[in-house]
Length: 453
Ligand code: ARG
Image (cartoon, rainbow, N blue to C red; front, side):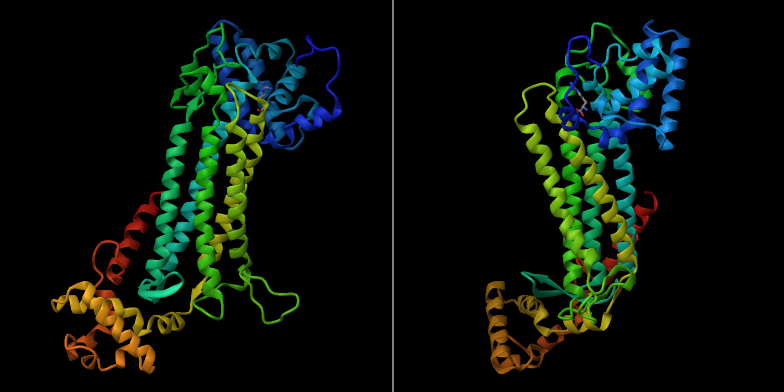
């Protein structure tokens, strides 16, 4: 493609080092769509005849069909997807093919292709996250009223329900989806026409090209347009954060499947055995989910580091944007799919959940609230309950069986009413709190939201 200037062939090792076709071939559909839009604008500008355009369009469609069918031969001598397709087009149709690259550079071309690719993949990821939300919601509905201890510092804190706990993840995933939507909106801008870095002396109708490709608008600075990879870093970040959410869910499930917690049973199909210890049933899917988060965050560091030292505008370092991007997308897709399946099939061990939540210590805060309602300042109430807890620990008598009236005159025999899990949950009616009614309302709200997505 640059033979005019060079007397020597590119060294084999340089070809091997510099090629991206082994992974950027997957941009082909977008590359072809971009080329067709670009060629159409060339017709408008009087640079191509209708006949030449028809040859280019059908030539590109045939190449697309060949790649679809796996019968296209890519070569690393042509570096990347852009040159592989263009060279083959010219080989097939002759002179018209050689006109295609007028007023275009691989710099605006690759920026266009990757934006289109990200846009399409965002839609796939969004649907995959929604599927996982639906699986979580289904379990949340089944176990809406199943009481469960909730933890801070991995110490039992207060009672909630399984529904409430699972809905926390539905919320996180909802934010991930809204971040994807933001990212999609920001990246849906056409860089085509920016050329290598300073546009072109040949003015094609950038807006018409953008409209054909479904972009909302055109970029407004040619240098920024070819140097910008914010959209890739942003998408890798959004994916990374979603991976972090899935990792936290995985960690909850790993704890819950242990004999120590015993709150959940994962299906045989979504767990693995040990080649040595016959009794084992391991939550490998959860562990891999936790492990993959590290890889997703590694991709984020890779892309940010690749960009950080680059002077304007395009530098070849930017070719390193694609593998982390592709890897993050592939990894998250598979992680979401396997988690959705596993969650849909998981069963809570409701007896174990209730037993764990029945520890009266979980209602110590409620006891302090009861004292507050009797007119005791909260700090003092906290201390009085602390005394009762200490006495329970010292004597071995459960908190709900102590004679509290002996601890302080502020306690009356009515205080015992606090030790009812059902009442404790029923009292938590403020928005966002886990009364069973609230949980059911939240489930209904999410079901409605997810029905339209
Ligand atoms: N394969 C290249 C990349 O991914 C395309 C752009 C090449 N531009 C150039 N000036 N060498 O970045």
